[in-house]
Length: 434
Image (tube, rainbow, N blue to C red; front, side, top):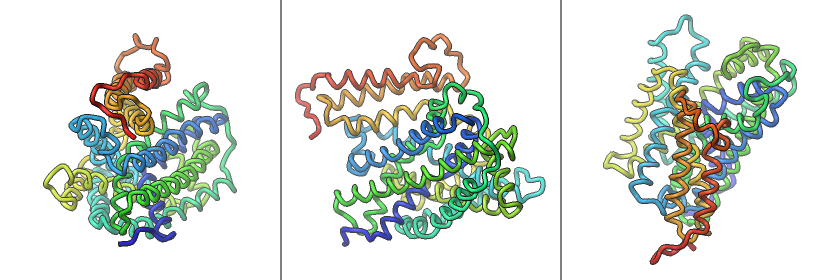
């Protein structure tokens, strides 16, 4: 068994990780954010990069620090609570939201433009074919680095690089005044928009999958495994930052080609058409389909890998089950799926952020078990208030809470809880982490 990876394997591992993260939300949300942010694009982009690049990278590092698995991340929680959290997150990033959304975006932007009067039948047929292809690649769990990192991702990155260079060389409009929430709250709005990528959830789950991939390459040493995991996270973060910056700039300079656009997909389509003409749709379709496909492969693989540890159903059987479930859910429709997912993200994203923070800070806590229970509980309670607000529930009576109007009522109470448990006494008979 080898204890090290070649440079080419490390790069492929990083590209694979990048491809897992770069999916539907990563491509459709930044152009719209840049379009609306206008003159405040830089501030909005910093906020977006914080939650869409910074937090996922820190999440990957947290998985490495915790020993490469969910059990390490949640070792101070009751086993039943930790399992429930993992199952909920896997359902969200798997068959319930993220994976079907990726398939829908691939259809809406990569396939639908070539059809005349497409209807439900075309969507259903595409869903079956798309998730069947994803299932095929996911079944080869041990070859993910070779199939994704060395084959699909280079093609995806090359297409994205062509688009990014074209946008910088030939912008299609001037940067104009900001709109909506971006006028006064550009950074915060960009920060919250980064939730939609779901990448902080994905980081916690992909981390475990990447560890398995590294071990299947023959690396068994824990320190080396963590080192390669962090390398993969850094490469993926650099790639994501490159894509986001170029897409934000694309959106900010799209006023000349996409006036009044309602979503990032429309902005991208109009921009690419202006840059490359009719052939541009082929370029865009290639980017979208490859990005969504590689992400779905990663999501289905990660979910199947975890669920196979909880049940007697094998990894390969879970791949088939989840692929079918994703194809069924994808037929709900993109707008409906996004509308349903947003409140769920507002409820659970702060909990994921708090969990990552605790992973780094628990060693300094006199009572780690108490810290996990209190901090995660507080973050969840106040995050539910933010979720209720975006779901349309009248919670205006709570607007006195700090940052409530910004959709971040959870932040200050969670910080206070972290500070409080830092001074909480150690329970008798308990020991803190080394």
